Length: 363
Image 1 (cartoon, rainbow, N blue to C red):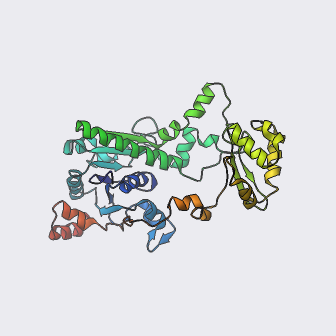
Image 2: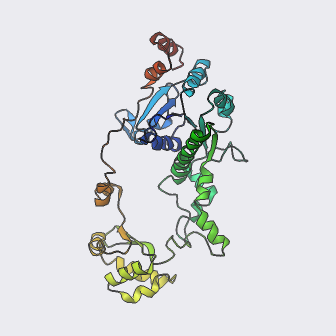
Image 3: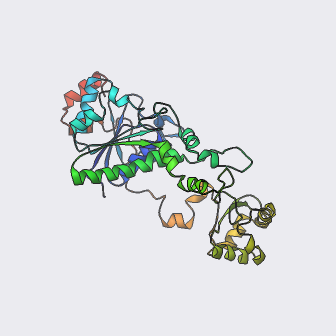
């Protein structure tokens, strides 16, 4: 495992930070989830609850250990700092200024451990007029301009079903930044503070849209070349329900589709924006069920695939071949404070000390 021997402290709640540290944990990092005594991560109680713990929490917190620490107490902060001495990374998701008010800001942590990489994940970043503003994925996507591009041309913006800013901007991008920072520590021995904004991340993914606009192309809801503007890149309703995705951007793929449909005269309509061109393809796909289209198109090299419902995904032959839903040898998601005693022993707290900390509400 590439990150075996790397210790990561996760002080975040909910989805973004947990997904970030999940990626690190799955690569072998020892991820220690630091939670508030009694309540812990808010996601622990998010329905559906299975065996007393949220299935959503379990999905993004495997391979981690949990310790409860009251960071508003002097003893709690001191215990965290003792663990910081042994850590390589600390990830936090508080609003700007909270860590400083707790006495756990970058200057304190960096003085304590010069090699530590600290990553702060927020909605809008550490500075700017929105830095202290509350928000969630839908808000970040709205500010970034991504939400305004999603939906039909004559309809309202449609929220995405996947939390793109949370998972990408707040999960994947900080994980990449942390890995880069760890490489820098290996080379120069000095840690750094990473400022991650989920809104920044979402904006960065609109590079092509902004480039198209700068180049004079219209870029609006329903007008993007990859949002249903052309017959060759759309989702079509099939007979009896179900949908089929067509992404035949290259002429060779579109030609293969038209030939398979026995409609070679449609080749010239690949990039047509005329309503009758769209209507023609809609009528064709509505003439067969999704399974009938699958039987006809599955053997063709035409960039066409059925739109699967969630309960169909694990059964798809490609997903099954990649073993994405097999139970591996990962550690189960921790119960709240499951590893508190274990982790305190690792920093030299004896059993009597553990009992005293519990009595004081520190853990």
